[in-house]
Image 1 (cartoon, rainbow, N blue to C red):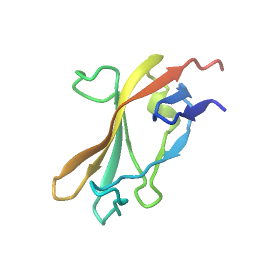
Image 2: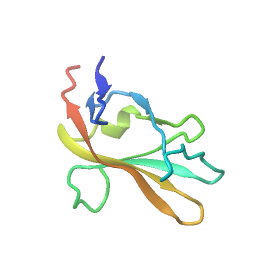
Image 3: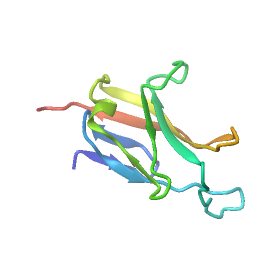
Image 4: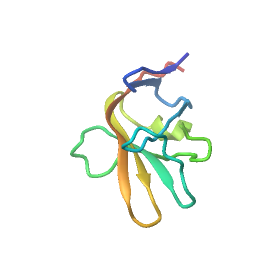
Length: 111
């Protein structure tokens, strides 16, 4: 397998590969958040937290609760570590980062 998501949510993957992973969002009381019409979830990764724009930005499938990488999402990026997060964005403008400061490690593509 050319990618893995560890228990601590660290993602290791080969640059240019197309993995997918499931996610969940929880309310403060511990119950699972049920996504509503107009909700979007965005995966964003930056090389450095201070970077103005993410190097990777992927909109999730909120019905299936899955992030799907396409080849072009990482093919152009430098190898190494990135910091990633998942955020819930509501049509009202409300935004909540529900997974933050996790590591994405891109490794070499041989072919």
